Length: 319
Image (cartoon, rainbow, N blue to C red):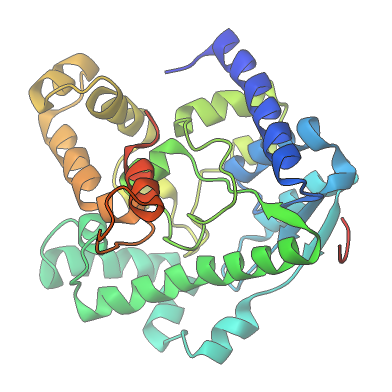
């Protein structure tokens, strides 16, 4: 894990990375979805250093379940740096699509119902780990309905971000981190889509330390990370493991290429937990490939780009 002075140095490298990308594309504006969460706040701070406030557009896209505290923090962060904001509620689009179902709506509006449903599905319906089940292509029909609803939120948000990016001759700046990327804890073509991903190579625990270095507001740092899908459902609850343990296991399995038993011994975490994370890694691999091509020309651009994506990670309106 990167720590202390290493992260200070990396912060400067990320700022230079952002500048180089915008320079090479001659892009005028950085469009970022500002959620009030720690990942988007860290990327926002890096953008401020790299480009200045006048070249950033913060798009805030709340929905029925978005916590007011997160919305307030997102607005305050943008305003404190003089960044132009656009706020659009995506709930009307969700209603128009027919994506809201009665059961899902109840679970979204009442955390206790959501937790009861999760327990019921794990014990009586899918009879397995619910997060692993959501990574399957063939899911229980009720899980599939809920998953489609939650993922649609992020895909609608990405549509809006690209709409504003194209209006402003800009680039969409993504906020996914390495922990999310490796576990499939993102939405393909949703928050997994962007023109550049500055923090994609940093684990969540590293993001927390970087947030302190960049002076992200404490109200954002202290809020438990949440996918903004269901009230009261945090990242760690949905993943079924806390980030400290998850990141240690991921580092051991992916970065150090340790075996299961060796990783358990190295991290001091149970073999059962390590085996579960390995299953998540394996089952989420399809999430990290944008699409599958027939491979007619294996030396062609499409095949090379796909292979690269799999092997990675080791004048209109103005802002």
